[in-house]
Length: 405
Image 1 (cartoon, one colour):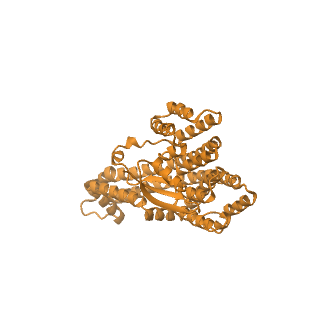
Image 2 (tube, one colour):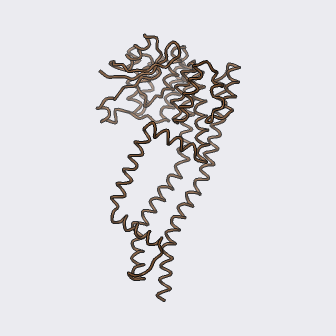
Image 3 (spheres, helix red, strand yellow):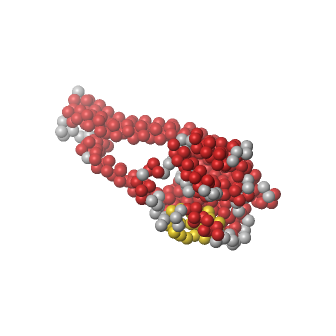
């Protein structure tokens, strides 16, 4: 029987975790609910080996497709279309990956299961934030309103990811071209030039130290290219494994927040994501403690996750969220100040959405500025690399030619 790991909130707003054996995820959720617990995360332990060997059983739905699905489902439910009919209609229009997911969701809903529980069985497609907002909407009877909020939330997240991806594409292309040009020169051009130098100066010709090092490295690459490929492959593999560990993620995120330019961009992205996600959950009727826990997992940065966890514990101990976040080194002071205003007026979600809009505009501006800086920097690096190689090659050739004359 499969084993599931769960995290839930009890009546005292405390987090309860554990493992349980059950036939499926929905049975675990039903069992926890009967015990007076509110599940926030239920995941299988270990997983199915057959699924690991068959990647197509884990469909990957693109962000753009999820945005369209959420917007269309929101429109249909708001227009009074029954949920099952709306899901069936959208299934016929969905792509192959989403079609498989919707087939399973429709089957669960037809069997009497809640929509949130059906969505929660597909964590690769529907995040914890998505599932918790739908669950809150079902509990309050405002699924149509929640879907509207979700559609806006998903669109904003997809838009931000698209901008970051487009901004990083050109520098990455230049980096690949620079690396390719370096290896191309070392493997195909430098050996020929080295032969010319030896022919001009003879075996006893004295070459500059940098030229000798460059020629030696070129000879090593030509003769032992498989060693370089093996080292690069092993290094990439080890780094990817290390980054997936808690210590590796923490180290990587700590270093990224110390980089001169990128730390500002990372901070703005984290603030925009936190404020919009937290506002959406609060507006959906989710409790502050539960909304903080779900939002913390959605930020994707280990330092921010720990910061939110600390603030959550202080809220559980009786503090206001604005007080818990006051003096934070990761969140700017405007966040705690605006939170205090929202808590006083009872419009925390509205206030946070304004902060999210502001910081999303700041992210756009920062990305544009970063792109305009990175492009010439990468070009200069490429030019400098080619220039160094040319200087270390053409200088000895000119010197040897003068000696011959």
